[in-house]
Amino acid sequence: MKVKRYIVNALPEALPIIRSELGIDAVILNTKEIRVGGFLGMFGKKKMEVIAAIESNANAVPAVRKPTSAPKPAVSPAALSHFAAMVSSAASVSAEAAAPESGRLLEDAVPLKAHAVQPVISNRSGMENELINEIRDMKQWIQKMSKQQQLKTWPEPVQELYERLIDQEIELKWVDKLMAEVEERIQFLQGSQPDKRFVWQSARSVLNEWLKDFEGERIGEQTRVVHFVGPTGVGKTTSIAKLAAEQTLKAGRKVGFITSDTYRIAAVDQLRTYANILDVPLEVVFSPSEVTRAYKQLEDRELIFMDTAGRNFRHELSVSEVNSLLQSHDRSETYLVLSLTGRYRDMSAVAEHFVKYGIQSVLFTKQDETNAYGSILNLVMDYGLKPAYIAYGQTVPDDIMPFQTDSYVEKVLGAAGDE
Ligand SMILES: Nc1nc2c(ncn2[C@@H]2O[C@H](COP(=O)(O)OP(=O)(O)OP(=O)(O)O)[C@@H](O)[C@H]2O)c(=O)[nH]1
Ligand SMILES: [Mg+2]
Image 1 (cartoon, protein in one colour):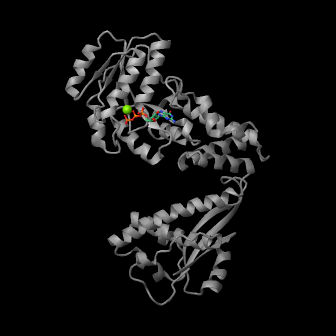
Image 2: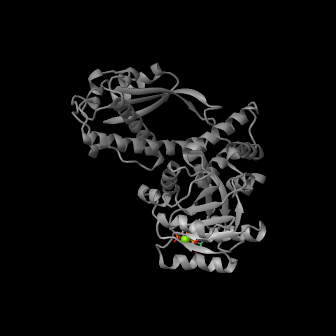
Image 3: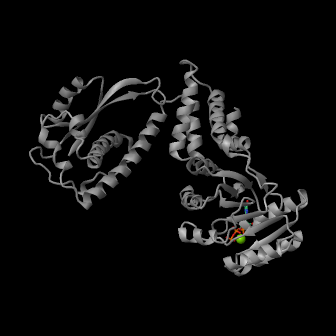
């Protein structure tokens, strides 16, 4: 099948061009109104996009589309518009697959020869479903590519902001939402071009607005027990030492440690070393049944930090296991510890499980090892998790601070925001 995409002012204009280029057997697979140029749909000209196709052998009616004939993403810009047309038509197929009764494809299409569109909607097999998934992936890829093309038509500071946000590894859906809100603010300029200061200030105020209900999470003055959970090696034990030092030396509270991390041989020794330095008692528990005994031993302590073993918390079973060790009452808190050097996809899988167990706060570590801070915003937006502390180095007790929205937003947007 040969597929072509036409951009015209109105549909009737396309028909003679399609006939002359693709022949009388061509069918129109889809039409849609689009805007060309402009920024996020603003300042653009209204046009009509028409996707037309012709079978390679116009008389043959293909029974089923085979995955092997699925188009593979082409990278060159020249191939892009042709490929966009392929995907756009395929997207109609998948929409049809999701709602076979809707007749959407036939409604949207202006068939020059009706039978040509029929085979693609009949008799779906596993292979076809696989094809549809593949097409969905390609569609996403195309959207990304066309976004990049569209980007070139935006005012320069807006382009820069978009690139900055993507570079910060903020999820695309939140980047799009943020850009839409910035666009709303730009509309107040009534047509005059936004400068960088304005764009950055707009982004700053949107981010502050989004985050304002999630800041201020700290170890409470009335809190008796603080648990730390999280994947292997993220910095749970080190962060406990930092916060315990702060609570002991600055807040003057009587602190105690419990560790259930008997998984690694050196783990108990690591916390014991900090316990000795800070002159804090340490209890080791080997099973959930021993936790009560440990609390009894530490009865005179005002604040107890509980360390747990790092596990692969992408498995929910590990999450339920660690949860059985945690005391849940109104004077206890649990921090999920995550390293900012991790991939968001993995963090998200871990967070999703912990959220089910009622965890609300995150302590982020290793800020010093990365320049991308988007995952903090992603976790706030995706799960409503509150960023409580940020650790930014290996030095105990210095390298930790409470999360602050202002300084976080400055880091995300970068110094470029100050022109
Ligand atoms: N650069 C940097 N390193 C850190 C930070 N926090 C912890 N680390 C280092 O990360 C390593 C692991 O720290 P731990 O505190 O043992 O991590 P953990 O989560 O307790 O590890 P497990 O108990 O084995 O799961 C150590 O080398 C720490 O010094 C940080 O904020 N920045
Ligand atoms: Mg540890």
